[in-house]
Amino acid sequence: MNVPALMATYQLRQREYLLRITRAMTSRLDLPSLLELILSSAAEMVAAPAGMIVLHEPMPSASFEVDGDGMAVESEPQARIRTTYGIPAELLPAFAPLLRPSSRPLPPDSDGASSVQTPGEQYRRDLERRVQDVEENLGRELGQVLGLPLFFEDELLGVIYLFRGGSAFTQLDWEFLEGFALQAAIAVRNARLYAQLSTERSRLAAIIEKSADGVLILRPDRRVEVINQTMEKMLGRVAADVIGQPCSQVLDLQNVTGDDLCGNSPVDIPTHGLRCEGELVRASGGNLAVSVTYTPLFDESERLVNVIANVSDITRFREEEEMKSTFVSIISHELKTPVALIKGYAQTLARPDATWDPETARQSLQIIEEEADRLESLINNLLDVSRIQAGDLRLDISDVDMNRLLERIAQDYRTQTTEHQIEVDLPDDLPLVSGDEERLRQVFTNLLGNAIKYSPDGGLIRIGAWVDRKAGNEDKRPRLVVYVADAGIGIPEDELPKIFDRFYRVDSSLRRGTAGVGLGLFLINAIVEAHKGEIWVRSELNKGTTFSVALPIEDENGPA
Ligand code: ADP
Image (cartoon, rainbow, N blue to C red; front, side):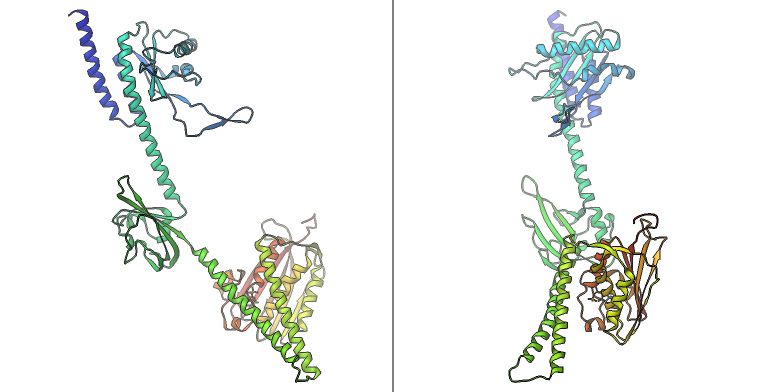
């Protein structure tokens, strides 16, 4: 065969090979195995005994590093050797110059000719310099080196390096490899997109799985396709139990307001979102107040693909709502009663057609004064609540003599009750407490007031104190513990954790007959906390209740 005929046969064989390789490459989506295929095929085609592929890592949309001056600068894309052929692993560090970021091969020229065929001067010189550096590192020459850039549009994805010792790459090799590089770049780009998609998919799955809201993904026939952890917990069911079930059997809501896509008489799936609220019936028992948002998802031909149900626990929101309405009803009742009394007595006293004996007038005026006091104390309590909520409860700190303070409070109450015996049992050497005297007065006045109020049959009320030097509290400081114990109606055990809540009152016939708005213990607790103290309660129904308040005191070895 003559030379042109030989050339033609060679070219035909190469073209067939290229076609086969291209098919194999485009069907591979796993990047590492695709790169192996690209490198081994390229090396085989031009009979190169060694080679490597360096890939530039794809850049996140905005990627910054901090330079030496602390300024944010756009970071260079990282280059990494992703696969090698015929190069022992221990020699790889010597190839580091090929990873240098500064120089990049020029993109293909605008006339369509590639930099492989007519490599730009800059690229060639740069490659030469890098190869020299590698040779220096290795301590020997590399011979013929071919750097084949992988371009997708204008983006440089990486470079295929082929090393062929003594024999030079021919023009035919260059031409052939140019076509190969184009196909390889497309395949690399596809594999990367595929990898990005899978990452994105697992990221979304993780977001859904870890969401603090319950999430159900429904198929167009409203059966459950995906359920996240929070939703499993809300329902008290496991995923395996729920997937494939109609959503009406999973998201079972009672007392629904709004549009429920999973209800018994379901609404049509709309093109926009839907919302409803209700009580979720849980498999594990009990109901949970939830709000559900349904969002339909359509594909590009506007076919329904999924409906996402987002389920939020609105228990706290409901509690707040309830609290507000309790607040309004309690406050209006508590305000109305004294105002009505004051007005009634004042009107009676002011009647021009009547004259009152001094005793009746004095009693009426005393009631007016007491009711005005009640109003004042309620208003002060409300002001304190808003201060606490604003984090603005200030203390006017001084050394407080608890002995004197508690004796005085006890004495004040003794004049108001004959049915109760108020005993104060305090050691003489009680240490001073550093605190706000008025606020501490408020604490113990309230506790003693409650002890009287909730012991309707009278009985003994004891106020005592002791120094806790072992300090059961966390910071191990000594503290003064003051207790107020009554022999009254007591508090049911299950109510104990709630009595310090705002507006909370234990429901009992006595409560309904006694004045109060359920703010006293809430305020006491806040005042004690502001003093870095602690309050606790022990109670037995129909036997009595003991409130204890611990306040930090000066350590004999130094200040508290
Ligand atoms: P109020 O007395 O205005 O209702 P508090 O916040 O002082 O509000 O108390 C909350 C609830 O705790 C009271 O309604 C009462 O049911 C209960 N309670 C408080 N102190 C006692 C006590 N010494 N004995 C029995 N129950 C008490």
